[in-house]
Structure formats: C-alpha cells, structure tokens
Length: 452
Ligand code: AMP
Ligand code: MG
Image (cartoon, rainbow, N blue to C red; front, side, top):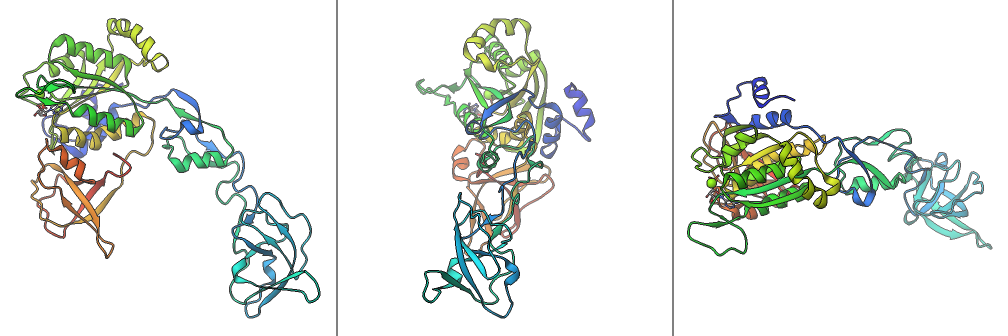
C-alpha cells in the first residue's frame, strides 16, 4: 500500500497547495482499492450492484432461429426479383408450439412472432404484405407475395444473435443496470456473483451546524450536506452509515472518525478543511491517519482532505459489540478507511463529490467504467472564467427545435446557493486552461441524469 507521499511523488507536478482539478482523479485512483468479497445474489437483488465475475452464456439466446413477425415462413430461394410468388399454406407454427411437418417448394406455413422456424425455411413475409385467397373449391389458403419486397433471410431472428453459448455475456466490473438484469434472466440464471456493497460513513462538522429539530439560532445553519451526501451515496448503491453532526470537540471527533473507520470502507466529512479553520477537524484527521490537505485550483470547492483513517485497535474493540449487533454481516475489517474530507459549502460538497469522490467510490465498488460521458452544448450566455482553475457552473441544458443542445447557467453561482443545484440539470465544466466563454461557444456539460 502506497503512502500519500509516494502517490504524490509519482504524479507529475503534484503540488497539494495548488492542485489541478484534472489531476485529482489519477491521485485518488492510486489511493483506493476495490472490495474483493463476493456475494451470490438473486437477480432481483442485483440492480445497481457490480458484477464480480464474467458471465459466460450457458445457452444461446435466442435458442433457435425464430420469426420476427406474424406472417408466413417459406424458403427464400423461391423469391424472384421481378415476379410475384404464390404459396400454399400447409400449417401453422405458434410461439411455444413448433410446426413439425415438412414444407415443400411452393408451400409455406403461417407463423407467429417468436415461433421456431421449421427446418429449411429462412424467410418470413409479414402478414400485411400478402394478399390471401382460398384455393377454388377448398379451404386451403393461398398467399401472394408481391415482387421485390423481400430478400431471403428477412424477418428471421437467428440462433444466438443476442448471446452465443460459451461466449461472455457480461463482464466482471459491469454495473448491473435494468437491461443487464434482463440479460442475465434471458440466460436462465437465477443468481449472479456481485461484489459486496460498499459501506460509506459520513458526518458533518462545524459548531454552527444544526441538526433538524433544533431551533434556529443566530449564526447557525441547518445541516444540508448530510442529506445531499446521503442522496448521492444512495443513488450510487452504497450502504450508508449516517453519523450525524459531530461537534467541534476532540473527543467527539475522534470517536466519530474511529467508529466510521471500523464500520466503513470510506468516510465522507464536510466542513472544517479550509485553511483558516479554527476547529479540531483537521487536527484529528492528521492524528488518526495519513491525510493530505489540498488546495485545488477549482471553483467551487477549493479545500479538500484525502487519505486514510486508521482503525485503531481499541476503537475496533470498543465499537465491535455495537457493530456486531447493528451491522452483523457487514462488518468491515480492513486496516483503514479512505477519507474524503469535503469542504463545507453545500454546492462545493456536491461538486467535489461528483467530480472526484463518485469515480473513486465506483472504483472501490469494483466497477470498471467510472467516467460519466460529457456532452457538448452551445452556451447561450457569455461566462467569465479565470485561467488556471477548473470551474463547475450549474447549467440548464435544453434542446432547441433544430435539435441542437444549448446551455445557460442558473444565475448566482455562489458555493452556498444549493438551489442552483436543484434548478440545474448538469454541471458546465470549464477547463483549467480555458478563459472566458462567448455566446455560442461550445462547452462541456456533465449531465446529472442517471447520476443524481
Ligand atoms: P467550512 O468549509 O467549514 O469553512 O464551511 C464553509 C461554509 O459551509 C460555511 O458557511 C458553513 O456554515 C457551511 N457549511 C458547513 N457545513 C455545512 C453543512 N453541513 N450544511 C450546510 N452548510 C454547511
Ligand atoms: Mg467550518
């Protein structure tokens, strides 16, 4: 396990006091490790979990060639480019009830969507493209297929065209989205191997922070960070351990950090990490672990602490009994927990979470793809931007009649203006090396949809 100093030494130009925002992900990626414990869970329980082993298809899907349409199946070799084709209907194949007879040249069978294609037949004409009549003096149906409409092989779904027996269907590290659950089920599998859920403890610090239910007093604000962090972690599929608002007292902070380190893989705090802080949060972080205090060239969210909080022997014993009764089968036993000490400002908490913490947590969850795709939109307004820092502005992306994407900011970009995060549907990410944005310039946007 590398120390923070070693990780920093490997990064070109690492300066904790003037850190480029675009170098934070690489640092954190070297700091964290993925969980290794694997659980076998029911498919219904697997949504949002991370696959712990490749799934090799035990069967092919579909398991046989079948019809993609309600219509008539026949041998496509009989299709002529310039002449209609007339066929006699000699039977019916239903979904789940195959036709077992033979079909000679000049014949076809009526077939329903999903029904097995009989031997020797490779083409289906949709019912609505045919004209039907009866053989004179009999009840036998005749169909006529107009020339030039079909190619041999049309409207037939081939065996294994979705998943082929023996080939990988899903890969280790994939996040199981609704489509993946369906895919697993299509293979007839009841359960899947997933990594255990990541446990994340969080608390808010600061003497001015009030818990809900406390009367408002002068100079104090209600704690909003615990609620946004709770929401972000829950959306990510983490097991959350809420440790409340912790007063600015060494004993209370030490107890909170140690309980968090015993119970969780990662700890998220908010507040108390800026330069001028008079409180004990930073002191306690330094005392209990290997922690770096950063000033990131970004806005909002300049100060941030990262590192590892050691799980002390006495703390583990002391909280072991409560852990046992509270989270018996989720007891965490690594030597330390990863610390993300976020700034206190409510928007800065969300921005640093989305930009840095979320990708790191996804890596800890065992997920192989952790970057959110960015989209490009034209700015509807001029945006002032300072060179030499990354700026994350709250943006509202909309699509104009001509299909182009445009974005405007939510107005006041203060790092305490949480309503800007509610009104926005994405973050406009303005690069470290870029300057002012003019009306009509393209900007990158990290969309919230599917993320928060
Ligand atoms: P700090 O990073 O501790 O200097 O806090 C920066 C600003 O964020 C201050 O105005 C704090 O009052 C505010 N703040 C800190 N923690 C919270 C919280 N949990 N909820 C709402 N505001 C907070
Ligand atoms: Mg503070």
